Image (cartoon, rainbow, N blue to C red):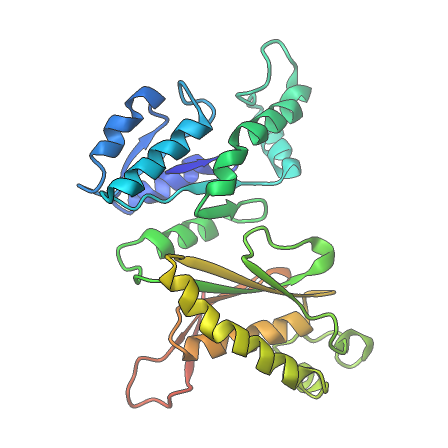
Length: 302
């Protein structure tokens, strides 16, 4: 079930799911939703629901999903398309469309009020969502790739992991399940020779790993995550995002994210590495070749 804020990309997500071969039904009246769900399991089904749905009731929707799970007939997932108010305002301004919850007779300046009312109405769905996709700074090709990776026929069963570096001044990534603060490490920014580089460069990596705090931190972090990830997977989680942050999102968090992504790939997890502030996304997997060195990693720029 795909829902979310108007202008956040629900229609785009539904089109991707349709391209993947799922049967899609967008905004069916709530009264017929039970009939649609009763047939779930016969074929992959994607249902789009938002505040325009006739008879919309977030509580009733969640109760229907819970009932479906209790019957064991299917394992429904709730996907919530989200975006910042600033971006939504810009999108409505660019398209000159009226927000569906803007009161009749109110000029375009009422879009903000409509967004606020919609956020309140959808809050229970966002809280219960299995996957929240923040499209504020997400290009459409990246949205498509994320959905294909999760719901495409070639997708691997089990949990996929995203390791992301970020800068704290720009805010925590909304999709983060766990966030780790690396600002206690020595900052290469204050070395004029290292400042232009990133954590992907060997001199910066050597500088950070020479910090006496690095080795104990790394040992404790991996000791925490190594048994934690299988527990998440056993609990039914299918998508986990680990966010590592520093001041600029360029040095310390990048180096730590690089090391962690490779560590997890070597352990057999399908890993996507994202450097938010550098604009880089890469799929990282341990090689399947039996002749290759066991610690060889193949990196594919997305």
